[in-house]
Image 1 (tube, rainbow, N blue to C red):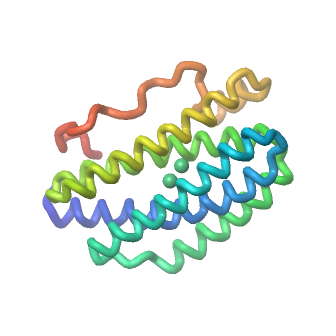
Image 2 (cartoon, helix red, strand yellow):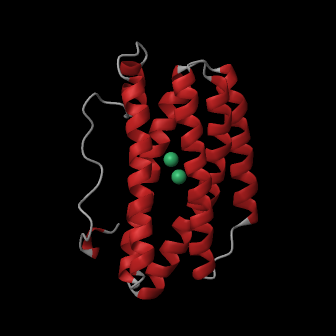
Image 3 (cartoon, protein in one colour):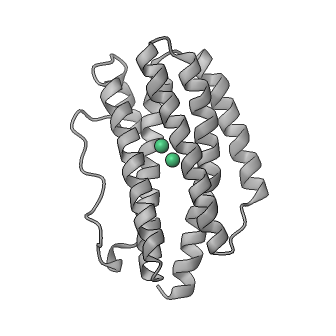
Length: 183
Ligand SMILES: [Fe+2]
Ligand SMILES: [Fe+2]
């Protein structure tokens, strides 16, 4: 990949992440309000706050790269996030926990790949920020992974959605992986 392609790929991931964080924040705003356990309420509220912080940070990265947010994606992800907000009140305890964890898994990997593109462009500060974002998403995933363990629906969900195994495979390669690992 040359620099133009790395830049294009990085902006594409940041566009998805910027709007994805919006959807996630809306979804968690519904999620923490829908659970009864006070500790879970507090934990998920904190995760919502993290997603707003991530969105602001990714917005700054897009600014730096002259990549304006995409209106159509913002609209689409707002609709998805607001649907998830409502869905959390209708689908019970387990499904929002499970799908939150599965989504966090994708976010972890998305930021990790973005960090590799940033490294190839010599944007080392951005690379470090993206790796930190990836770590936070991994901690979110861990939280939901732990909380769904032992639920009676989990084996069925693992079969269909392939996430939530009792001992998940390591998701990330070590930082500073050579660029040949890029897709
Ligand atoms: Fe996030
Ligand atoms: Fe997250």
